[in-house]
Image 1: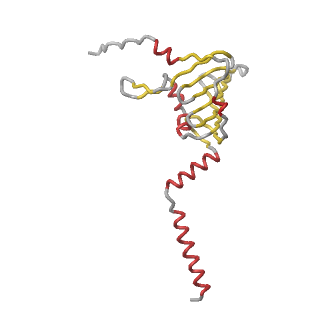
Image 2: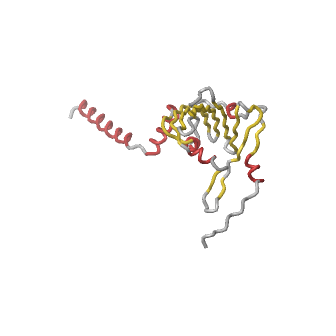
Image 3: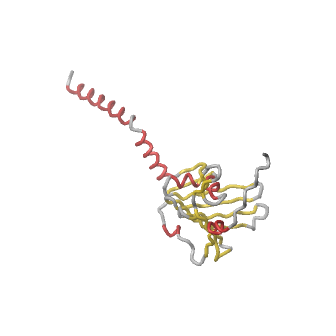
Length: 196
């Protein structure tokens, strides 16, 4: 075999071996590349806020949904970073488009804060905590809070450079702690089982 033929055969064999190695990279490396691509390019699809927050990434997401029963349409924009979330929403009455409600939600991972520009000095906060129910299931926060975080919406998300000021509570707003109020409510005794 001539030296040129030997070189060509060696290059072809090396190329074949290298291509086989590249195509058989471990799944973890491929998953890391997919995650990096998602982080750089963003996400589009049906997601819950719980799912997005569990990824611990920095996204800004927009969404829109309609409530046919109440004849409303809600649009929102959320900023996510780690376990923190800030959200601006506007709900429009479809029957009378001049009527709308704006609201803000901030979660720092420990509390969820809500307020509205209509009530400039007051808002509410609810502690996010796990509680066991009588049947042994774990319930997070106050009724409805977990369900709202698990509800899926059609969203478009893109990466953003985090501005920590977004996750600051507004000045001049006093937040009423609904978790504390709930603790002070008297418990209703369970009804006796009348089937016996």
